[in-house]
Amino acid sequence: MRRTAYTVIGVLILCVMLFPVYWMLNASLQPSGNTLTAGFLPLHPTFAGYKRALDEQGGNLVTSLIIAAGTVVLSLAIATPCAYALSQFRSRWVSIGLLAILISQMIPGIVIANALYTAYERLGLLNSIPGLIVANCSSGIPFAILILRSFMMSLPPSLVEAARVDGAGLFRAFVAIVLPISKNSLITAGLFSFLFSWSDFLFALTLTTKGRVRPVTLGIYQYLGTQVQNWNAVMATAVLSAIPAIVLLVAAQKYIAAGAIGGAVK
Amino acid sequence: MAASTLMQGTKVAGPKPARRPRGRRHRGEDLTKLLFVLPAAIAMIALFGYPVVKNLLMSLQDYGLRTFFTGVAPWVGLKNYSAVVTDKLFSDAMLNTALFTIGSIAFQFVIGLGLALFFRQRFPLGGLLRSLLLLPWLLPLIVSSATWRSILEQDSGILNRSLLGLHIINDPVPWLNSPSVALIAVIGVNIWIGIPFNVTLLYSGLTEIPDELYEAGQLDGATGWRAFWYITWPNLRAVAGVVLMLGVVYTIKVLDIILGLTGGGPANATQTLATQSYEKSFVDFKFGQGAALSNILIAISFVFAIFYLRSTRRAVDE
Image 1 (cartoon, rainbow over the protein chains, first blue to last red):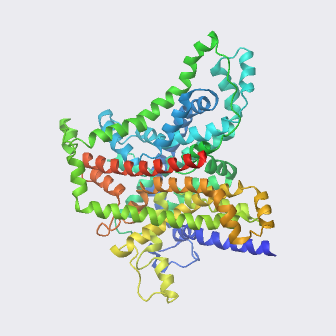
Image 2: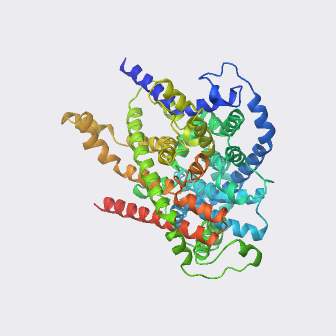
């Protein structure tokens, strides 16, 4: 009886906390562009907002998808061997490396953007997808190192030693033994790298100037720039941009818990 | 992101690999080991080391729009720092940054702790509800900003319509349009975004407190509030320290939410050091001044981090 009461209270807390998410969905389905008339329920749902969102932001969604996928690949390729080294090799450099990662978390994104802007300007990387992928790796790489390392700390050294006795080099043992065992933590790190990059707004805002390359976060910001006329299109874009987070939460729940506690925060 | 590093600093995670004997074979391997770390080291230097050094240099240069054409950025000493500090907006931005950070963290933490304690009770669907609670934390910040802007709209937003309908207010509140209210509204939204993170870390801290402590406490009559003060809080302090320090480090540099909600307005009421730094660099193209502001931001973060690290070291030593 008392436990059921807790469940009811828990559901109520969740309803309050997730109301904005519901409102986003509701507003995206409302017929008029103005939320003034929007009721609490989308009684006459229309997909006009979604049609407009896809027409105007469809390309931006694809751009975001490419950038996020690229960030995952590059971040994991760079972070995984390093995480393994930091978990298995014994050296005073390990604690120096971890301290460096800790300090890197205190560097505001605007500092990175400032420096990358001037460097990109010379290198011709402004307004480019590779440029944004590299910038987004600044959140993907340290996070992936931390997540993967904390998993790899639990690998017994004897595992790799056995392969080494059979004559495999350090690198071959890493690819053939460590990577397959680490699959789950690689998925966790990859999912979060994807999400960070998909959510990136600061680099999209500062490292693009021409609108040739425009991630969807920047698309939403430009919707908000002027007096908003069509909230249903804005909210439809917001819903579409929220899909990776929702999919992650529903389909990959166990990976999230690992990620949230193992490496935490953005 | 730094949570795990910090947590691993306070407890030893996992078994340590046995030290291997160093033979001739291993010397050749040192090169291979180096190759494991090298790409990440280069990336970290390029993405963090270079920007920090570059910002330090830029903050001492007259680095402006002209620099991009002429390639010349004359050295000006500390002129950028004196320019941004004497700017009439600076003290406002400092105050707003302090209010934004303290206000956000205090409420995120207290509400987060309350919810973590609540979800510590075992009840049907508890785990599921707790994971669904994470959603606000996973959404792109600009999506949250857009959604809250529609909710907070003065005339048509659902918040004012509801409050008017319930006769709690008589006139619509200009949540984002009035200088006296906008900062509170922005802090409120940031609290909402930060709660799930606080719940998650504090909850994981709570689950690590052994049940036996509570059982023993019960025998001594420590239940309810007394159990919280004498058992829960002392055992949660290390995790709470991590949560609070991370809160400061992350909140102090928040940009997306403010730009999405108010753009720093109305009348600069929601300008912080971070938004100022962005505006100096990317709106006014005064990169030197933008760098000076962001260096001040880094310095403040560092002070908090050092303060925190010192206090945890003392706690470990005790």
